[in-house]
Amino acid sequence: MRLRITTWNINSVRLRLPLVLRLLDEQAPDVLCLQETKCPDDKFPSSDLRKAGYEHIHFVGQKGYHGVAILSRLPFEAPETMSFCGKADARHMSVRLAAGAGAAAGMVIHNFYVPAGGDVPDPALNEKFAHKLQFLAEMRAWCATARPTASPAVLVGDLNVAPLEHDVWSHKQLLDVVSHTPVETQALETLRGEAGWADAARVLTPEPEKIYTWWSYRSPDWAKANKGRRLDHVWLSPDLMGTCRSVEILQDARSWDRPSDHAPVTATLEL
DNA sequence: ATGGTTGTCATACAA
Image (cartoon, rainbow, N blue to C red; front, side, top):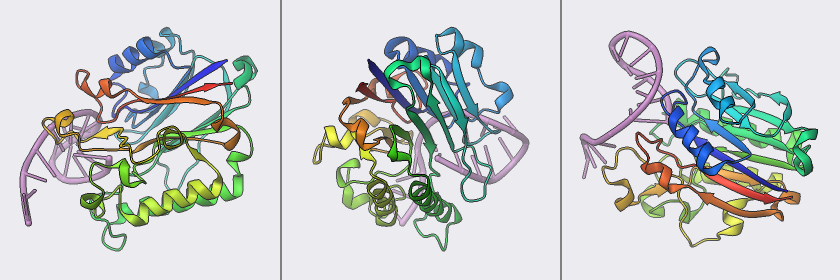
């Protein structure tokens, strides 16, 4: 069977519900993982999404900030959320595809929203950056303890780090910019490598080809300037990497009406 | 060196 999983930082699921529905209609992924839903649970637009064919929905939100959700055409079970850094922020959820999901049954899908980290890349001066580094340290500890890659698993999300030189438009100019500082990129690559996650986009499209998934709202002509960063990721457990046929970035969606600043990223597996 | 935009909530704050 072919399994398609999409990750998208939607930056308000209510404001951009028409864009979500368009993505589901045009791309029809089996599973869609959203970040930054910015939506309290009692206002999540479940019925519209169910009508679009995504009957299995799990969300955890809060007023104004953060929030993650998983929408699926395939049944899942065991929805869980983890908290990091002693905060109640809605920055993670996971589900396990259930018996009705055919060859994908048993696969665990983790959806992460790593803190952006503010502007000043010094944890002593900027507590948001300190929080981001602590979050990455706790992700590393979780991988060491829970061993999520020991069975078929996918980790997707807005990790808010562009780890490699060609994950940003200018390596030199961004070395001091939060998202591409050495302390973050090393933390992310260390935890990924140590845990055995495959960076699916980079296995299929090695450097030096540039890959971006995010373009700032502050650039008036973002497409022409193309000063992007690869902040959104698909990581696969080793046993799944061999099944990955493609990782595609739907850059078109960055041009849709009132877009998110992130593009959807879709991995296709042949199981 | 600086400012550039967006969403939420209600006027800054986070991204």
